[in-house]
Structures are given as C-alpha cells and as structure tokens.
Length: 46
Image 1 (tube, rainbow, N blue to C red):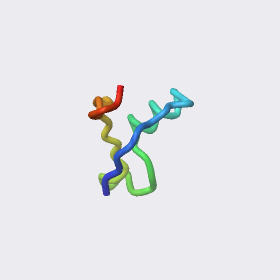
Image 2: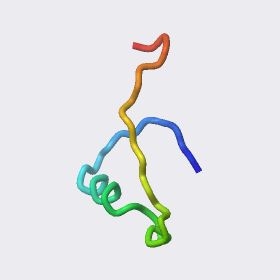
Image 3: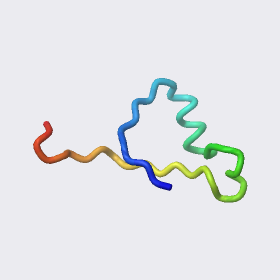
Image 4: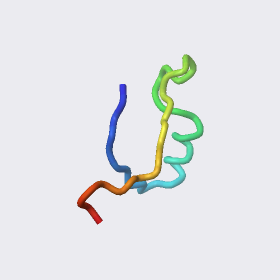
C-alpha cells in the first residue's frame, strides 16, 4: 500500500522513534516500514 501526501511533525521524538523502529504489530515480519522523501515543487505552486 502506498500513500502520497505531506507530513507535519508535531512530536519530533515520537516521529524519530516511529521512523527508526517502524509502526504496527507486524513490523517484526517486515511490515511497518516508513519511506519518506523531501517534498518536491509542484507545477503552478510556489
């Protein structure tokens, strides 16, 4: 499953932990991976 959107981090410590450890119950089986990329400019938006 893939989601596309923007993220606003309100709790840096919790975000860092989720990024390092993964999320969800099945992370021990390779699920729960977070893959992030920098926001890229969109045509017509500044």
